[in-house]
Image (cartoon, rainbow, N blue to C red):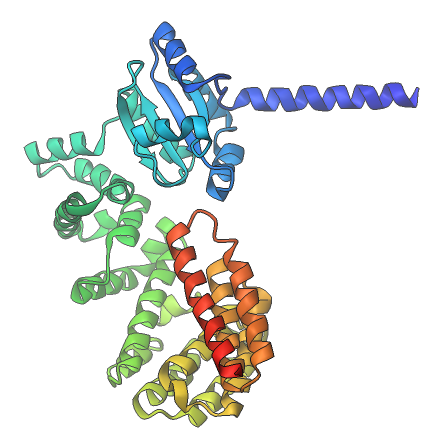
Length: 435
């Protein structure tokens, strides 16, 4: 009886799993050539997921995107779908034919083998469906929208559609095309903002446009946008919630930090806005033991004196006070930045005591940060401090840990190679120091 129950449970589980898999994309079982034959037979384009077995974003798309019911329903009706391990010997030439150089890459291919569209990088459900609908003729491509805009440059709805699509379109451009389109889109963006400036601009779609396309190159324009959001903050929060306030906070904090590091006393103007013009925006920060204004004043004063006057002692004391006041509100990045600025501003002038303090801060950062690039950076920073303390055994230990962490940088071949090369150089330097 127990065996029978177990078998029934197993059967139910398998049926449920099969039903779940049927909800997503049904991938063709066969070769690329056989899939093209099937595409010709059914008169449908081919959808190809070019992946690599080591690629984490590929696995995420396979598990979280391709399995969604809405995605499956659309792709199963409109395409013959195929998954291709692009690094498998028999598939390498096929991948080259469609210029697959990074993963994941998804391609839409006509039954005669001609590429209709090739998209590089991970995509979520909306992005994948949009790409598929453009190929199927059910949605308008970016270029088609732009042609429509040139014929009717006063159509704000058309401009909004273009600007919402712009980030993904720009990400797929290369070389001179990327520069050309970036210039066009920035010009269109500023024209659009100027035309809608006022209550018409306060909505979710336009906030997304501002957030993704308002760069740091034109400081005056960004300052104008930040002030506009702050002046109409209740309406913006009703439209998009707290992100509107955080937009103001992040921009003002970034300006204060850059000015302080440059030794420019105008950073104090940014600090004063925290209890003045931007007070309502900073209310979202919600610190308990220290107000946003007091935090900023303590931090940016210390940062200015560190970079301008090389006041290491004052900076360390200020950071100790700040981190103590923040307590449980202190984030891993707070500890990491405290140490990183110490290294960057003072470098070789740091005393053994300074290095030991930096190690303590970075160890705290490591306890709460799982982002691979940050962890590699932190581990190398600790290794550098131990090297300066002439504890070469510890330095080697942390460099090796950093190298091991870098192995997690899947799908980032170039940055990974650069990081690993730098760590190998540091390990080679240690060997020379030990002789």
